[in-house]
Image (cartoon, rainbow, N blue to C red; front, side, top):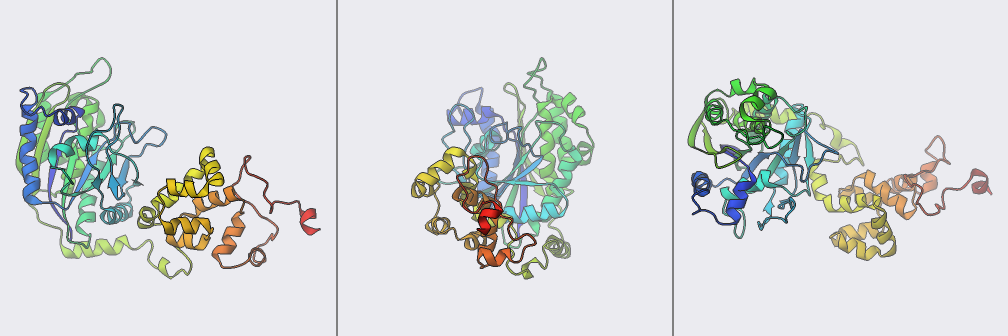
Length: 434
């Protein structure tokens, strides 16, 4: 079974990454930052976690206001550094753990957390600023990463209590995972700071230390605080420390603090801390009941012949293929595909198996492989095939055989719009009967 071996807390200011990249360890202004991270880096070396589940907030880099989620779990196979305006940092990508992420997603949604999932997005300094300090990463990172992005920059946001409950649910999710994994939960963000308005530059050192005390000994008090109370004490952006409560909730009621540091060089109180669980793992009977509850919603669906629920696992497997088919909504992309199909398929990095299925328009094989039907209908619109042609092919029937099972056999349609070429199947009824 997976085990939570402890929790790490670390601020995620861009200054940390700046100091690391420019090797400012011996600069008096930055030396305390490096010294704060040294014990945490050593703890990771000694404890050798297999996976870091890292909670952070994106800074309007990969997540924009056109779709802003409260909780977004990274389910991808690999994570790259985001370009935040001046070029991406020179850090290698870090491997994800899609299997654990899929299990966590199923567990959290089963506990009624409205979770979104993402892949293919680069991660900004909210993740990689502390991560580059926490782990030696040349040539490779020592652990895999499951990022959990939290939308704390656009109100309304979840309550502090909700973040704490999410952590408690994460504990059940992780400890019920059947593979033996050592997991460290990492909290990032804060401490006190404000970066906008006339209050920019606000800090509260006394509150920062009080917060660290309460975090260890009385997280319930922190969970009861409002966003306005956090903002008054620690600055509006400093209120992002409510994300730390997710890590604290995952550790259980009692923890032992193995390291704690604090330094305020400029705009943000920079803290690091290590906490280990004192309560022990959840009882096996609890975890067994939890696993049973996780499987309840889809129990029996496997008996539905010719039915393939689009799970997180299928989404990860078919990501490149679904991305290519989805991007046919872009006029230039579909024009290229129609003019130079092989070049378009190669440019998308599809495997030979994936390319072959697209070439042959093998709708059933595409579905079985992991394509979503709702990108297949886009491909159909581009190549001039109706939705009903696709349905018939998936059933192994001719169009005429499938139409005979419909109430209105002559009703053919697709999602094709005004730019579609002439659709040979879209003929007036009188012409079709002639």
